[in-house]
Length: 297
Ligand code: C5P
Image (cartoon, rainbow, N blue to C red):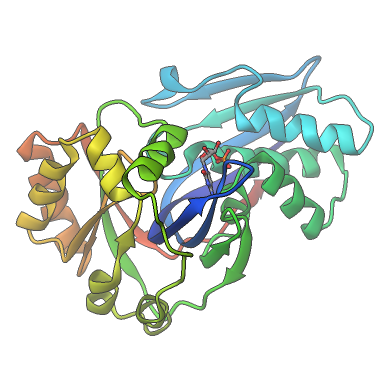
C-alpha cells in the first residue's frame, strides 16, 4: 500500500523580522500565502527508512536523515513507539533552497503520509506540534491557504482570502542559506523593532485586492538577501520592467516573486524574465492553494 500527499509552496507577502532572540531565532510577523506549485510525497512500507527524489532539481535534494521528510517520519514513529520503516519518494516541483518552503513542504507531506500509512491517527494538534518541531515554516505547509505566523513563524492564525492572486516566480541559480540571510539581517539591522503585521496588507488579502496587495508587499529579509546576492536586484528590475505590479524576494530567497494582474500578464512577465537572462527559469502560479492533503490511499 502507498499513500501520496500533495503539498503547496508558499510565498511570504509580508515578512516582518524582529531582533534575534536568546535561542537564536527571530520573532516574526510572517504572512504566508500558499501557491499552486506542488511537491508530492509517496510513502510505501519498506525494510528501512529511505528517501528518493525525482524532478528537475532532484540532484540538489539531500536524501539522508537531514531531509525534513525523513525527520518527519522519525519524529512520528518515535512518538508512537514504532520503527520508521518507510520509503518516502518525493516528486519535486517546488524550487530547491529557494525561499518557497520546499523542504518544509516535504516534511509536512511526509508526516501526513506516514500518519495515514501507519494508521497512527495523530490529531491535528499533534501533527501541527510535530511540524513546529521540524521547522518554523512546516506548520503552514500543513495548513495552506493564507495565515499569519507569529513566534518564530510557527504559531498560525488563518487569514480569510477574498480572491485569486496571480504570481510569477523567478528561480535563481543556486540557493541561499536561511541562517546566513538571518545573520546578514542582524548585521544590517542592529535595532530591529518588534514585528507587526500590516493592517493594509491583511485588508488586501481579505478583499482580494491585487493592486492594494502589490502596494503592501514587504520583506525585511530582502536587504539581507540582496546584500548576499546583489544580482537579485537585476531580476527584480526585469520583472517590474516587464509589467509586474510588484516584485519581492520570497522569504530568505533567492527566488523572487512577482505579483501580476492576471494569468495573461503572468505568462508575459515569465517570458520576459527568462529572456532577460537574470534567472534560471520562471514559473507561474496562483493563490490560494490548499495545504497538504492525501491524494490516494
Ligand atoms: O525553523 P527553521 O529550521 O526553518 O529555521 C532555519 C534557520 O533560519 C534557523 O536556524 C535560524 O537561523 C533562522 N530562523 C530565524 N528565525 C526564525 C526562523 C528561522 O532566525 N523565525
